[in-house]
Length: 67
Image (cartoon, one colour):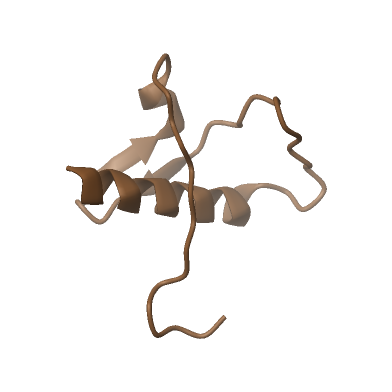
């Protein structure tokens, strides 16, 4: 469960970078825009599905990939 949550958080962070307009600056304390992402579990996860819950978004590069 913990590993799946970590993967979902990482993927959500990556998606945020991909779908957010370059001019959209999110500042500390701002409400995050809603977005959806296909998880490694085959399900689509939306930020709005976690409304009312604490969500920590973290990102780290996949091992042995460039960049």
